[in-house]
Structures are given as structure tokens and as C-alpha cells.
Image (spheres, one colour):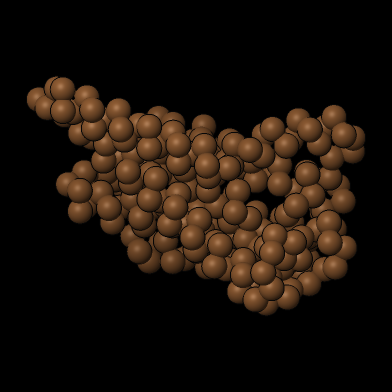
Length: 211
């Protein structure tokens, strides 16, 4: 995937998000909301799949396992590869998450439950941290980076990330435009970070669309 293609996809994602903010978000939001406490509870479990904490713990544990087994069996290239890939995926999640956190503060979009549709730039606090969606960012970053590390997992993980993104609308903490932007930052940011780190760690890995 060339840098030009990534830029085009990023612009498409951005403009789709902006279009959604002005044309769809308020219209779609009531239809996505959970209609009962039981339904909300189920979707709250799903939404936790986009929590960066468990991703970080899993990836750190994977890196440690690769480190230990590489020391035990240095002639086996699998463990060294696992160490490098887990580190890259961790950096993809952390890097895209950091970008999203900065944008949240700058933009200051009120969450749906605030009943105040609008933007309040440089307003600190979770109530004004709707755009972009952090859970969507981390879910798509993990899915894309892990999918680049293990290609057979790419599409199942991306599908799961989409479900996580939708769950944020169901429980009433994000609009559709927030999810679109989070997915854009997560997926495309992960490609850039994975490709950059893989080259420096001597790990060859084609980005999506490359052979």
C-alpha cells in the first residue's frame, strides 16, 4: 500500500466522518441505542474488546514469552519473529491511541448522552471526548496490525473491530462519525507504524494490498 493510497483513504475516511457529523449522526443515533438494560449489558461486554488495557497486557505477555523462548532456543526463528511482531502491534495500538487522545482534547465533541450536540474545543473530560472513538481506534489498530503479523486473522479481526465500533453507538457513548474517524486512524495508522517498525527491526511484512 503506497503512501499516496494511504493518504487518499485517510481523506476519504475524514470526509465520510465529517459528512456523517452533519448529515447522519443525529438521525442514526436513536436507532442504534440499546432498547433494554439487558441488551445494553450484552453490548457493554462486547465494547470491552476495544479496551486498550487487555490488548497491552496480551501483547506484553506475548513479547515476554517470545523473549524467554528465544533465549532458550535461539536457533528457532519463530520466537524472535513473535517478539518483533508483538512489539510492533503494541506500538501500533499505542501510537494510534495517542493520536486519538490528542484529537479528542482539541476537538472536544460532546458525547450523545450530554444532550448537547456540538464541539467544545480544548474541553478536558470524558464527556467531551466523543470524536474520534478511542475504542474504535484501538480495535481497528489491533485488528490491522495483528492481521499484518498473521494475515489469516486480518478479516476476522477487522469484522470484530467493526462490531466493537458499532457497540459504542449502541451503548450511547459515540456517534457514527466518531466510529468512522476512529476506524480510519486505527487501521491506516497501524499500517504506517507496522511498516515503519518492521523495516527497522528487519521483519519483512507486506502491507494490505501488497504482494
